[in-house]
Image (cartoon, rainbow, N blue to C red; front, side, top):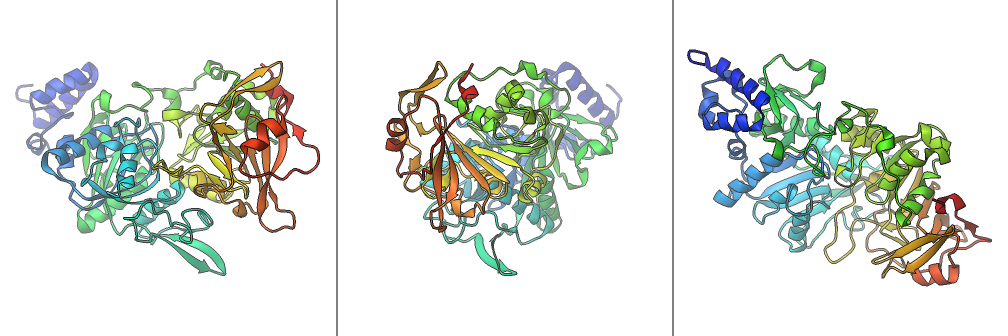
Length: 572
């Protein structure tokens, strides 16, 4: 490359890196020409590459004390290289420090990878999140009173970020009324250090509403995409979700004009300007300040496994026959019964994390038992419409999705009543029909996620979970359910630890509580005052006096003869 211009050298280096893989990129970096680990001095000599820098250089730009927002969802779209660089700088220099973090859902493997990289005392001193179950390090800081912390509905947090981007004061909504985020309950506060109110009860037109106040300034965004061009335009062609990255970037970009805001995007490849089609660009270069090129081992599509699944990004469609049926156990029984609640064609369904994920598998493998499922649209609050939603560390994504939309847009659809049936988890329920999935005491408080947004607005709500937990073992024998070993922990309690769903907020909607041995429904109390849980169905082989009533903290309403759960559920 003797005699070539600096720009030409850079472009040749980029080409060589993509042809030869990460090893070539690392070798180029050592030679002083690499983009994957480039130096500021190299960029100064190459005007085209002015936004490209190393992760270490990017981390050095983050000031102390600011609010920071991070891309990602459960196990997807993690800007891992950027987070590592921030943590390494803090460990070495004590900066950046006292950051505030606002995010809809954490990303991690619950073993230190992901958002937990930032879970260090002094690095972070305040948190606003929808769900942080994959980052237990943050929960430890909350338990130990090392940080201020608020848990708010995931959709509300998404809209807070959007409102911050638009310069608005924050969402004003019915979402959260009657739950633990209502200021008449806890206001979303998680420990004694947290005294400031970020949720306020207001009245507009005679209606009670909650006003969620956005942080004054969200000045730094750590984001992630697939491809960047030399102007900073970012495309997402190999990403499984859009999430809220445009809103996250917009807020920091607007702040950049006034007070030094910063948008840093981690990508897996860089191309020349003019390469990306305008319709492929999700983040415009005008609002991107720095680009960091990540090696493959720090840029997994999802944390479930390395590599790339084109069925999650929409590049290909995977054959549904490749999805294995669920084994005959309590999870399958519950998922099967829930699938039968899809009672009309063209339903839009939301599936929550955990037990509800099995409904997607049943739709894929047993749709012949319910013709209505052939036209169902399964969706996720993260932004996937259609296809078969992924589970575990792929939660929020979807195989063969029909389309992807930003999280805030999906939440708009949900809040407007777009979900016909929501299938959500069931950790605890009480005699008034209240449900808890967010806080189980002893510091176990992963958060509400999208549960509140969805359960308060779906036309029909199915809460699904085992009847007891902690060692439960069941078997199906000759079409009968046998309880081989009862769980140690009852789920139907006199009072739940925390109200993530308020039975009083059902407003006449159909609400079911589906377990492996019984189905309950939300009903009005005799006399019409308040709500209660009514026993509707029991599984074949289950004895009411032996297997149900002794394991409840209250007696459910029983009116007339209780039906038997559909026999087909208990057949191979």
